[in-house]
Image 1 (tube, rainbow, N blue to C red):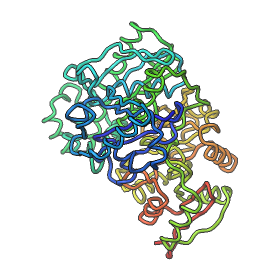
Image 2 (image 1 turned 45 degrees about the horizontal axis):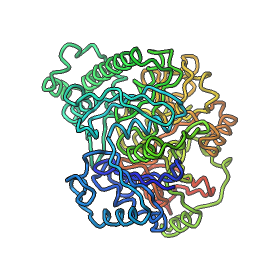
Image 3 (image 1 turned 90 degrees about the vertical axis):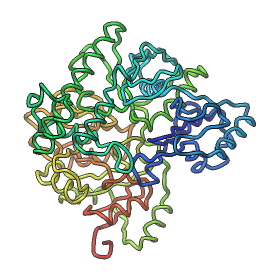
Image 4 (image 1 turned 135 degrees about the horizontal axis):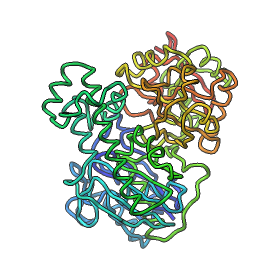
Length: 525
Protein backbone atom coordinates (compact mmCIF):
# COMPACT_ATOMS: atom_id res chain seq x y z
CA UNK A 1 0.00 0.00 0.00
CA UNK A 2 1.23 3.47 -0.90
CA UNK A 3 0.50 6.68 1.01
CA UNK A 4 1.70 10.03 -0.28
CA UNK A 5 2.01 12.80 2.30
CA UNK A 6 2.87 16.36 1.42
CA UNK A 7 3.58 19.70 3.08
CA UNK A 8 2.85 23.01 1.36
CA UNK A 9 3.58 26.62 2.20
CA UNK A 10 7.13 26.77 3.58
CA UNK A 11 9.41 23.80 4.32
CA UNK A 12 7.80 22.16 1.29
CA UNK A 13 8.20 18.39 1.15
CA UNK A 14 6.59 15.13 0.15
CA UNK A 15 6.87 11.56 1.45
CA UNK A 16 6.06 8.21 -0.10
CA UNK A 17 5.16 5.60 2.51
CA UNK A 18 5.14 2.00 1.28
CA UNK A 19 3.54 -0.48 3.68
CA UNK A 20 4.27 1.90 6.53
CA UNK A 21 7.96 2.49 5.73
CA UNK A 22 9.15 5.74 4.12
CA UNK A 23 10.82 4.97 0.80
CA UNK A 24 11.53 8.58 -0.11
CA UNK A 25 11.26 12.00 1.54
CA UNK A 26 12.37 15.09 -0.35
CA UNK A 27 12.28 18.82 0.36
CA UNK A 28 11.85 21.51 -2.26
CA UNK A 29 14.77 23.61 -1.01
CA UNK A 30 17.27 20.91 -1.95
CA UNK A 31 16.31 21.37 -5.60
CA UNK A 32 15.41 25.07 -5.72
CA UNK A 33 18.73 25.88 -3.95
CA UNK A 34 16.88 28.53 -1.93
CA UNK A 35 16.22 27.92 1.75
CA UNK A 36 12.59 27.47 2.76
CA UNK A 37 10.90 28.66 -0.46
CA UNK A 38 7.12 28.76 -0.66
CA UNK A 39 5.55 26.09 -2.78
CA UNK A 40 3.16 23.18 -3.16
CA UNK A 41 4.23 19.77 -1.90
CA UNK A 42 1.64 18.00 -4.04
CA UNK A 43 3.04 19.65 -7.16
CA UNK A 44 6.55 18.65 -6.12
CA UNK A 45 5.55 15.02 -5.58
CA UNK A 46 3.76 14.72 -8.90
CA UNK A 47 6.64 16.42 -10.71
CA UNK A 48 9.33 14.27 -9.07
CA UNK A 49 7.79 10.80 -8.94
CA UNK A 50 7.14 8.65 -12.01
CA UNK A 51 3.53 8.19 -13.09
CA UNK A 52 3.80 4.44 -12.42
CA UNK A 53 4.25 5.16 -8.71
CA UNK A 54 1.66 7.95 -8.51
CA UNK A 55 -0.96 5.76 -10.16
CA UNK A 56 -0.57 3.19 -7.36
CA UNK A 57 -1.09 5.65 -4.48
CA UNK A 58 -4.02 4.67 -2.25
CA UNK A 59 -4.13 7.69 0.04
CA UNK A 60 -2.94 11.28 -0.17
CA UNK A 61 -2.59 13.43 2.93
CA UNK A 62 -1.68 17.00 3.84
CA UNK A 63 -0.20 17.42 7.30
CA UNK A 64 -0.89 21.13 7.71
CA UNK A 65 -4.60 21.73 8.24
CA UNK A 66 -5.94 25.00 6.87
CA UNK A 67 -3.00 25.62 4.54
CA UNK A 68 -5.18 25.11 1.48
CA UNK A 69 -7.67 27.91 0.91
CA UNK A 70 -10.54 27.84 0.32
CA UNK A 71 -11.43 24.55 1.97
CA UNK A 72 -12.44 21.65 -0.20
CA UNK A 73 -10.32 19.38 -2.33
CA UNK A 74 -11.65 20.76 -5.60
CA UNK A 75 -10.66 24.38 -4.92
CA UNK A 76 -7.38 24.48 -3.16
CA UNK A 77 -3.86 25.77 -3.49
CA UNK A 78 -1.36 26.85 -0.87
CA UNK A 79 -0.99 30.54 -0.10
CA UNK A 80 0.84 32.10 -3.00
CA UNK A 81 0.39 29.04 -5.25
CA UNK A 82 -2.42 27.47 -7.20
CA UNK A 83 -2.02 24.30 -9.20
CA UNK A 84 -5.45 22.92 -10.04
CA UNK A 85 -3.98 20.46 -12.54
CA UNK A 86 -2.21 18.59 -9.75
CA UNK A 87 -5.36 18.42 -7.66
CA UNK A 88 -7.18 17.01 -10.69
CA UNK A 89 -4.47 14.36 -11.10
CA UNK A 90 -4.71 13.41 -7.44
CA UNK A 91 -8.50 13.14 -7.61
CA UNK A 92 -8.28 10.95 -10.70
CA UNK A 93 -5.86 8.58 -8.95
CA UNK A 94 -8.01 8.44 -5.81
CA UNK A 95 -11.15 7.70 -7.81
CA UNK A 96 -9.38 4.91 -9.73
CA UNK A 97 -7.96 3.32 -6.56
CA UNK A 98 -11.05 3.92 -4.42
CA UNK A 99 -8.77 5.97 -2.17
CA UNK A 100 -9.15 9.02 0.03
CA UNK A 101 -7.56 12.37 0.82
CA UNK A 102 -6.93 13.44 4.44
CA UNK A 103 -6.17 16.96 5.62
CA UNK A 104 -4.66 16.56 9.09
CA UNK A 105 -3.76 18.89 11.94
CA UNK A 106 -0.36 20.57 11.96
CA UNK A 107 0.63 19.40 15.45
CA UNK A 108 -1.10 16.06 15.02
CA UNK A 109 1.31 15.46 12.13
CA UNK A 110 4.32 16.62 14.18
CA UNK A 111 3.31 14.36 17.06
CA UNK A 112 2.76 11.41 14.73
CA UNK A 113 6.15 11.76 13.15
CA UNK A 114 7.83 11.86 16.55
CA UNK A 115 6.01 8.89 18.04
CA UNK A 116 5.76 6.59 15.04
CA UNK A 117 9.41 7.08 14.04
CA UNK A 118 10.49 6.15 17.57
CA UNK A 119 10.73 2.69 19.08
CA UNK A 120 8.57 3.70 22.06
CA UNK A 121 5.52 1.53 22.62
CA UNK A 122 4.03 4.35 24.68
CA UNK A 123 5.14 7.91 25.29
CA UNK A 124 4.23 11.42 26.31
CA UNK A 125 4.50 13.56 23.16
CA UNK A 126 5.09 17.31 23.18
CA UNK A 127 5.22 19.56 20.11
CA UNK A 128 6.51 23.15 20.17
CA UNK A 129 6.89 25.55 17.26
CA UNK A 130 5.81 28.92 15.86
CA UNK A 131 2.22 27.85 15.26
CA UNK A 132 -0.07 25.77 13.09
CA UNK A 133 -3.75 24.91 12.70
CA UNK A 134 -5.55 21.88 14.06
CA UNK A 135 -8.69 20.27 12.73
CA UNK A 136 -10.84 21.84 15.46
CA UNK A 137 -9.90 25.31 14.23
CA UNK A 138 -7.47 26.07 17.05
CA UNK A 139 -4.11 27.54 16.01
CA UNK A 140 -1.48 26.39 18.48
CA UNK A 141 2.26 26.55 19.05
CA UNK A 142 2.27 23.97 21.88
CA UNK A 143 0.44 20.66 22.11
CA UNK A 144 0.61 17.52 24.26
CA UNK A 145 -0.35 14.00 23.20
CA UNK A 146 -0.23 10.48 24.51
CA UNK A 147 1.08 7.74 22.26
CA UNK A 148 -0.13 4.19 22.88
CA UNK A 149 0.68 1.41 20.45
CA UNK A 150 -0.45 2.50 17.00
CA UNK A 151 -2.54 5.47 18.20
CA UNK A 152 -1.94 8.98 19.45
CA UNK A 153 -4.47 10.88 21.56
CA UNK A 154 -4.60 14.64 22.26
CA UNK A 155 -4.11 15.76 25.84
CA UNK A 156 -3.74 19.53 25.55
CA UNK A 157 -3.77 22.02 22.68
CA UNK A 158 -2.85 25.51 23.92
CA UNK A 159 -4.03 28.44 21.73
CA UNK A 160 -1.19 30.37 20.15
CA UNK A 161 -2.07 33.63 21.90
CA UNK A 162 -1.42 31.95 25.25
CA UNK A 163 1.97 30.41 24.47
CA UNK A 164 4.34 30.74 21.52
CA UNK A 165 7.97 29.95 22.24
CA UNK A 166 8.81 29.50 18.55
CA UNK A 167 7.32 32.88 17.75
CA UNK A 168 9.45 34.48 20.49
CA UNK A 169 12.64 33.06 18.94
CA UNK A 170 11.62 34.23 15.47
CA UNK A 171 10.90 37.71 16.81
CA UNK A 172 14.28 38.07 18.52
CA UNK A 173 16.19 36.45 15.67
CA UNK A 174 14.75 38.90 13.13
CA UNK A 175 14.27 42.10 15.14
CA UNK A 176 17.11 42.04 17.67
CA UNK A 177 19.83 40.17 15.79
CA UNK A 178 18.82 41.14 12.25
CA UNK A 179 19.00 37.54 11.04
CA UNK A 180 16.79 35.64 8.61
CA UNK A 181 13.76 33.55 9.59
CA UNK A 182 12.64 32.48 6.12
CA UNK A 183 13.44 32.41 2.41
CA UNK A 184 15.86 32.89 0.78
CA UNK A 185 18.43 32.45 3.59
CA UNK A 186 16.27 30.27 5.81
CA UNK A 187 15.85 30.30 9.56
CA UNK A 188 18.94 31.43 11.44
CA UNK A 189 17.65 30.83 14.96
CA UNK A 190 20.37 28.20 15.32
CA UNK A 191 22.96 30.97 15.05
CA UNK A 192 21.38 32.67 18.06
CA UNK A 193 21.49 29.39 19.98
CA UNK A 194 25.20 29.13 19.16
CA UNK A 195 25.76 32.68 20.48
CA UNK A 196 24.31 31.79 23.86
CA UNK A 197 27.34 29.72 24.89
CA UNK A 198 29.48 32.88 24.85
CA UNK A 199 27.06 35.07 26.80
CA UNK A 200 26.18 35.94 30.37
CA UNK A 201 22.42 35.53 30.97
CA UNK A 202 22.52 37.89 33.97
CA UNK A 203 23.57 40.96 31.96
CA UNK A 204 20.07 41.69 30.65
CA UNK A 205 18.07 39.51 33.01
CA UNK A 206 15.88 42.36 34.27
CA UNK A 207 14.91 43.95 30.97
CA UNK A 208 15.46 41.43 28.18
CA UNK A 209 11.74 41.45 27.30
CA UNK A 210 12.04 45.11 26.23
CA UNK A 211 12.69 44.35 22.59
CA UNK A 212 13.40 47.96 21.55
CA UNK A 213 16.05 48.25 24.25
CA UNK A 214 17.53 44.91 23.22
CA UNK A 215 17.77 46.09 19.61
CA UNK A 216 19.75 49.09 20.72
CA UNK A 217 21.98 47.02 23.00
CA UNK A 218 22.61 44.43 20.29
CA UNK A 219 23.87 47.16 17.98
CA UNK A 220 26.40 48.33 20.56
CA UNK A 221 28.61 45.25 20.71
CA UNK A 222 28.97 41.61 19.78
CA UNK A 223 29.21 40.69 23.46
CA UNK A 224 25.81 42.27 24.08
CA UNK A 225 24.42 40.02 21.36
CA UNK A 226 25.90 37.00 23.10
CA UNK A 227 24.42 38.10 26.44
CA UNK A 228 20.96 38.62 24.96
CA UNK A 229 21.14 35.20 23.31
CA UNK A 230 22.16 33.69 26.64
CA UNK A 231 19.14 35.00 28.54
CA UNK A 232 16.82 33.97 25.69
CA UNK A 233 18.28 30.46 25.84
CA UNK A 234 18.07 30.36 29.64
CA UNK A 235 14.41 31.44 29.55
CA UNK A 236 13.68 28.81 26.91
CA UNK A 237 15.22 26.05 29.01
CA UNK A 238 13.29 27.19 32.08
CA UNK A 239 9.97 27.15 30.23
CA UNK A 240 10.58 23.80 28.55
CA UNK A 241 11.61 22.27 31.87
CA UNK A 242 8.47 23.59 33.57
CA UNK A 243 6.17 22.40 30.79
CA UNK A 244 7.65 18.91 30.66
CA UNK A 245 7.57 18.62 34.45
CA UNK A 246 3.94 19.71 34.60
CA UNK A 247 2.74 17.12 32.09
CA UNK A 248 4.92 14.33 33.43
CA UNK A 249 3.22 14.77 36.80
CA UNK A 250 -0.21 14.59 35.22
CA UNK A 251 0.65 11.82 32.75
CA UNK A 252 3.65 9.88 34.09
CA UNK A 253 5.70 8.10 31.42
CA UNK A 254 9.25 6.90 31.01
CA UNK A 255 9.38 7.93 27.37
CA UNK A 256 9.22 11.45 25.96
CA UNK A 257 8.92 12.23 22.24
CA UNK A 258 9.34 15.76 20.93
CA UNK A 259 8.77 17.54 17.63
CA UNK A 260 8.13 20.98 16.16
CA UNK A 261 10.71 23.60 15.30
CA UNK A 262 11.55 24.36 18.93
CA UNK A 263 12.73 20.75 19.27
CA UNK A 264 15.70 21.81 17.13
CA UNK A 265 16.96 23.58 20.27
CA UNK A 266 19.40 20.76 20.93
CA UNK A 267 20.93 22.57 23.93
CA UNK A 268 17.65 22.35 25.82
CA UNK A 269 16.92 18.84 24.52
CA UNK A 270 20.29 17.63 25.79
CA UNK A 271 19.42 18.74 29.33
CA UNK A 272 16.04 17.03 29.63
CA UNK A 273 17.40 13.69 30.81
CA UNK A 274 19.32 15.44 33.61
CA UNK A 275 16.23 17.39 34.64
CA UNK A 276 14.12 14.24 34.63
CA UNK A 277 16.36 11.19 35.15
CA UNK A 278 13.31 8.94 35.40
CA UNK A 279 12.96 9.25 31.61
CA UNK A 280 14.38 6.26 29.79
CA UNK A 281 13.95 7.85 26.38
CA UNK A 282 14.14 11.45 25.15
CA UNK A 283 13.47 11.24 21.43
CA UNK A 284 13.36 13.91 18.73
CA UNK A 285 12.51 12.87 15.19
CA UNK A 286 15.04 13.72 12.45
CA UNK A 287 12.75 16.29 10.77
CA UNK A 288 10.99 18.08 13.66
CA UNK A 289 10.36 21.28 11.69
CA UNK A 290 7.58 21.56 9.11
CA UNK A 291 9.45 19.59 6.45
CA UNK A 292 8.53 16.53 8.56
CA UNK A 293 4.78 17.12 8.36
CA UNK A 294 4.55 15.05 5.18
CA UNK A 295 6.15 12.14 7.05
CA UNK A 296 3.94 12.61 10.09
CA UNK A 297 0.65 12.81 8.20
CA UNK A 298 1.46 9.68 6.19
CA UNK A 299 2.40 7.79 9.35
CA UNK A 300 -0.81 8.90 11.06
CA UNK A 301 -2.89 7.55 8.18
CA UNK A 302 -0.99 4.24 8.17
CA UNK A 303 -1.07 3.59 11.90
CA UNK A 304 -3.87 5.57 13.53
CA UNK A 305 -6.47 5.65 10.76
CA UNK A 306 -5.77 2.36 8.97
CA UNK A 307 -4.91 0.60 12.25
CA UNK A 308 -1.69 -1.01 11.07
CA UNK A 309 0.74 -2.23 13.75
CA UNK A 310 3.85 -0.33 14.82
CA UNK A 311 7.16 -0.81 13.04
CA UNK A 312 10.20 -1.60 15.17
CA UNK A 313 13.31 0.06 13.79
CA UNK A 314 16.74 -1.54 14.10
CA UNK A 315 18.55 1.02 16.24
CA UNK A 316 16.80 4.06 14.67
CA UNK A 317 14.39 4.95 11.89
CA UNK A 318 16.46 5.82 8.85
CA UNK A 319 16.91 9.48 8.02
CA UNK A 320 18.60 8.67 4.69
CA UNK A 321 15.46 9.02 2.59
CA UNK A 322 16.69 11.02 -0.41
CA UNK A 323 16.91 9.61 -3.92
CA UNK A 324 20.03 7.57 -4.67
CA UNK A 325 22.34 8.36 -7.57
CA UNK A 326 24.12 5.70 -9.62
CA UNK A 327 27.75 5.54 -10.65
CA UNK A 328 26.63 6.57 -14.14
CA UNK A 329 24.86 9.62 -12.68
CA UNK A 330 28.00 10.63 -10.81
CA UNK A 331 30.43 10.03 -13.66
CA UNK A 332 28.17 11.87 -16.10
CA UNK A 333 28.06 14.88 -13.79
CA UNK A 334 31.84 14.80 -13.39
CA UNK A 335 32.39 14.52 -17.12
CA UNK A 336 29.98 17.34 -17.90
CA UNK A 337 31.91 19.50 -15.47
CA UNK A 338 35.16 18.59 -17.19
CA UNK A 339 36.56 17.72 -13.79
CA UNK A 340 39.33 15.21 -13.08
CA UNK A 341 38.73 12.29 -10.73
CA UNK A 342 40.32 9.00 -9.72
CA UNK A 343 39.42 5.68 -8.18
CA UNK A 344 40.56 5.41 -4.55
CA UNK A 345 39.85 3.49 -1.34
CA UNK A 346 38.59 4.62 2.05
CA UNK A 347 42.11 4.10 3.37
CA UNK A 348 43.40 6.71 0.90
CA UNK A 349 40.84 9.21 2.17
CA UNK A 350 41.73 8.47 5.80
CA UNK A 351 45.33 9.38 5.02
CA UNK A 352 44.16 12.69 3.59
CA UNK A 353 42.17 13.42 6.74
CA UNK A 354 45.21 12.61 8.85
CA UNK A 355 47.11 15.08 6.66
CA UNK A 356 44.64 17.81 7.73
CA UNK A 357 42.70 17.90 4.48
CA UNK A 358 39.03 18.94 4.36
CA UNK A 359 36.88 16.29 2.64
CA UNK A 360 33.33 16.61 1.34
CA UNK A 361 31.33 13.38 1.30
CA UNK A 362 28.60 12.36 -1.14
CA UNK A 363 27.13 8.96 -0.27
CA UNK A 364 23.92 7.29 -1.47
CA UNK A 365 20.60 8.91 -0.45
CA UNK A 366 20.69 12.29 1.26
CA UNK A 367 19.60 12.83 4.83
CA UNK A 368 16.12 14.10 5.65
CA UNK A 369 16.37 17.11 7.88
CA UNK A 370 18.73 20.03 8.39
CA UNK A 371 21.63 17.99 9.82
CA UNK A 372 24.10 16.17 7.59
CA UNK A 373 24.75 12.72 9.03
CA UNK A 374 27.51 11.33 6.85
CA UNK A 375 25.90 11.18 3.41
CA UNK A 376 26.11 14.90 2.55
CA UNK A 377 28.82 15.96 4.99
CA UNK A 378 32.06 17.90 5.13
CA UNK A 379 34.43 16.03 7.42
CA UNK A 380 37.80 16.86 8.95
CA UNK A 381 40.22 15.97 11.75
CA UNK A 382 38.75 17.07 15.11
CA UNK A 383 42.21 17.02 16.72
CA UNK A 384 43.29 20.19 14.91
CA UNK A 385 43.07 23.42 16.90
CA UNK A 386 42.97 25.38 13.61
CA UNK A 387 40.35 23.36 11.77
CA UNK A 388 37.26 25.09 13.22
CA UNK A 389 38.37 28.58 12.18
CA UNK A 390 39.60 27.30 8.83
CA UNK A 391 36.26 25.73 7.84
CA UNK A 392 34.16 28.63 9.15
CA UNK A 393 36.23 31.17 7.24
CA UNK A 394 37.23 29.41 4.03
CA UNK A 395 34.46 26.88 3.44
CA UNK A 396 31.25 27.81 5.22
CA UNK A 397 31.80 31.60 5.15
CA UNK A 398 29.96 32.15 8.41
CA UNK A 399 30.44 33.62 11.88
CA UNK A 400 33.64 32.70 13.70
CA UNK A 401 31.81 31.32 16.75
CA UNK A 402 29.70 28.74 14.93
CA UNK A 403 30.45 25.21 16.21
CA UNK A 404 30.93 21.92 14.40
CA UNK A 405 29.54 18.56 15.39
CA UNK A 406 31.38 15.42 16.44
CA UNK A 407 30.27 12.21 14.78
CA UNK A 408 31.13 9.50 17.31
CA UNK A 409 30.83 5.72 17.43
CA UNK A 410 27.78 5.00 19.60
CA UNK A 411 29.69 2.59 21.85
CA UNK A 412 32.31 5.26 22.63
CA UNK A 413 29.96 7.95 23.99
CA UNK A 414 30.57 7.21 27.68
CA UNK A 415 34.33 7.53 27.20
CA UNK A 416 34.02 11.07 25.86
CA UNK A 417 30.82 12.65 27.19
CA UNK A 418 29.38 13.19 30.66
CA UNK A 419 26.10 11.48 29.68
CA UNK A 420 25.38 8.27 27.81
CA UNK A 421 22.91 9.49 25.21
CA UNK A 422 21.54 8.32 21.89
CA UNK A 423 21.72 11.20 19.42
CA UNK A 424 21.47 9.65 15.94
CA UNK A 425 20.07 12.78 14.31
CA UNK A 426 22.44 15.24 16.00
CA UNK A 427 19.59 16.29 18.27
CA UNK A 428 21.30 16.73 21.66
CA UNK A 429 24.06 18.95 23.02
CA UNK A 430 26.10 17.27 25.75
CA UNK A 431 29.28 18.31 27.57
CA UNK A 432 32.58 16.59 26.93
CA UNK A 433 34.42 15.04 29.85
CA UNK A 434 37.10 17.46 31.03
CA UNK A 435 39.89 14.92 30.74
CA UNK A 436 39.38 14.29 27.00
CA UNK A 437 38.02 17.46 25.41
CA UNK A 438 41.53 18.80 24.75
CA UNK A 439 42.03 15.92 22.30
CA UNK A 440 39.35 17.18 19.87
CA UNK A 441 39.37 21.01 20.05
CA UNK A 442 37.76 21.46 16.63
CA UNK A 443 34.42 20.06 17.85
CA UNK A 444 34.29 21.49 21.38
CA UNK A 445 32.08 24.57 21.78
CA UNK A 446 33.14 27.46 24.02
CA UNK A 447 31.27 26.06 27.03
CA UNK A 448 32.79 22.57 26.64
CA UNK A 449 29.75 21.09 24.92
CA UNK A 450 28.99 19.65 21.50
CA UNK A 451 25.98 18.67 19.39
CA UNK A 452 26.93 15.08 18.83
CA UNK A 453 25.84 12.52 16.27
CA UNK A 454 25.98 8.97 17.54
CA UNK A 455 26.67 6.52 14.71
CA UNK A 456 25.78 2.82 14.56
CA UNK A 457 26.43 0.25 11.87
CA UNK A 458 22.70 -0.23 11.32
CA UNK A 459 22.13 3.49 10.82
CA UNK A 460 24.92 4.10 8.31
CA UNK A 461 27.22 1.16 7.67
CA UNK A 462 29.74 3.03 5.53
CA UNK A 463 30.07 5.99 7.88
CA UNK A 464 30.32 3.76 10.95
CA UNK A 465 33.08 1.63 9.41
CA UNK A 466 34.88 4.74 8.18
CA UNK A 467 34.91 6.32 11.67
CA UNK A 468 36.02 2.99 13.12
CA UNK A 469 38.99 2.96 10.73
CA UNK A 470 39.67 6.58 11.61
CA UNK A 471 39.76 5.56 15.27
CA UNK A 472 42.51 3.09 14.43
CA UNK A 473 44.45 5.75 12.52
CA UNK A 474 44.00 8.70 14.88
CA UNK A 475 43.26 7.30 18.32
CA UNK A 476 39.93 9.19 18.50
CA UNK A 477 36.54 7.67 17.55
CA UNK A 478 35.30 11.06 16.37
CA UNK A 479 35.17 13.01 13.11
CA UNK A 480 34.33 16.67 12.65
CA UNK A 481 31.09 16.73 10.68
CA UNK A 482 29.28 19.69 9.15
CA UNK A 483 26.74 19.92 6.37
CA UNK A 484 27.94 19.89 2.77
CA UNK A 485 26.87 23.38 1.73
CA UNK A 486 27.95 27.00 1.69
CA UNK A 487 25.17 29.41 2.76
CA UNK A 488 22.65 27.45 0.69
CA UNK A 489 20.67 24.25 1.30
CA UNK A 490 22.61 21.01 1.75
CA UNK A 491 23.68 19.59 -1.62
CA UNK A 492 21.37 17.00 -3.09
CA UNK A 493 22.63 15.94 -6.52
CA UNK A 494 26.12 15.15 -7.85
CA UNK A 495 25.96 18.45 -9.75
CA UNK A 496 25.28 20.37 -6.52
CA UNK A 497 28.20 18.61 -4.86
CA UNK A 498 30.57 19.50 -7.68
CA UNK A 499 29.43 23.15 -7.75
CA UNK A 500 29.85 23.56 -3.99
CA UNK A 501 33.25 21.88 -4.09
CA UNK A 502 34.49 24.13 -6.88
CA UNK A 503 33.15 27.26 -5.19
CA UNK A 504 34.80 26.69 -1.80
CA UNK A 505 38.17 25.81 -0.35
CA UNK A 506 37.26 22.18 0.30
CA UNK A 507 40.35 20.10 -0.53
CA UNK A 508 38.67 16.93 -1.85
CA UNK A 509 35.27 15.66 -2.92
CA UNK A 510 34.71 11.95 -2.24
CA UNK A 511 31.84 9.99 -3.79
CA UNK A 512 32.22 7.29 -1.17
CA UNK A 513 29.65 4.82 -2.48
CA UNK A 514 31.53 4.47 -5.76
CA UNK A 515 34.95 5.45 -4.33
CA UNK A 516 35.68 8.29 -6.74
CA UNK A 517 37.79 11.20 -5.52
CA UNK A 518 38.11 14.71 -6.91
CA UNK A 519 41.14 16.78 -5.85
CA UNK A 520 41.17 20.56 -5.70
CA UNK A 521 43.79 21.63 -8.20
CA UNK A 522 44.29 24.17 -10.93
CA UNK A 523 42.34 22.12 -13.45
CA UNK A 524 39.31 21.94 -11.12
CA UNK A 525 39.22 25.56 -9.94
